Length: 459
Image 1 (cartoon, rainbow, N blue to C red):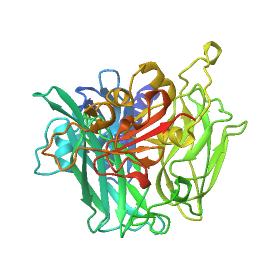
Image 2: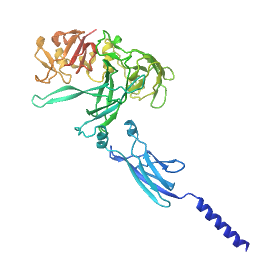
Image 3: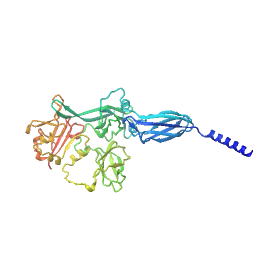
């Protein structure tokens, strides 16, 4: 009798426990990268229980085929999404799907990064963009007040190859576009080229911000670049500086950080500077650096060290405040097997501009000597986008764009003085040559809408 009572009691307890246990089911699916047409492996998928007294989030990771599974999962309705570095860079929240998981059953949901066409259509609704073009968009805000700057102009420039099939010549054509920020500070530049560096600048109320770089990957077709602008430290568009140092912006912002190798080791002695500003620092034993007297706004930090690839990355600076930027350098040369050839830096300004240039062509003394050219015009003719018309003293340079263009002859300077012919300086006396195909890329004091050629004699 006691055994029968015990069995009945245990059965009742089991039924009570089973009744109190939460009902569970299973949720599974896959995540695809529609931009690159492949599974999205190793990404975190989150499932958040909604419409319940207690919101709970569960996380799973996709396998190499992009598959994920939640098991067991309490029955209920879930919001399912996933993490994506690409969508984060585009400031796109990512697709969220809702699915109901029933007790004792399997629910299925498939997720995907939107296709290139979808991303481009979101950025430029109603527009059909040509191949190899995309969209650059973002927000322009005041660097110190953090408020949107309505009416600010975002100007972008790039170089394009113009191939004349009749004369079989190739010329470099400079192109540009601009967009005006709306009341919320948003700008959209649709139809810019993909897979090449763009020169970018904010202009507002007669002042110009720093010259920056932007890049739109063709796979996504869209890139987001938020910009900040400080009227107090920006240059005036109407004033040309007398020297490069006077042209460099200054302010009360500062920047600190560390420079390490990709393996995590501190890099000592690396040169650190914010482009287009005067302050320069070198990292200490711990790889730390500090830069002061910097202008506020969006700028580019450059880090250089022998044996490592040069790194440039955007930094946001604010007046009276210190920002932080940590940099990882990738080693490109094994120092114990290097053969060093040391040449004196006879042209420091040439070297600085070559290091900072986004576009342009540069020939130093060593490269010129390797050409074994008889005349200076022979050297000039090796630069893509330029050709020589005439010979000897009558030789002149043309961009090869044809007589129908508004201008085809770039400004030529020899040792900072205007010249009528490039052959005024013998090739044996050539020290360095700079060619800027547009006014946007040339030094402020030597800008020409048809391009600028700066020739330097040996020193």
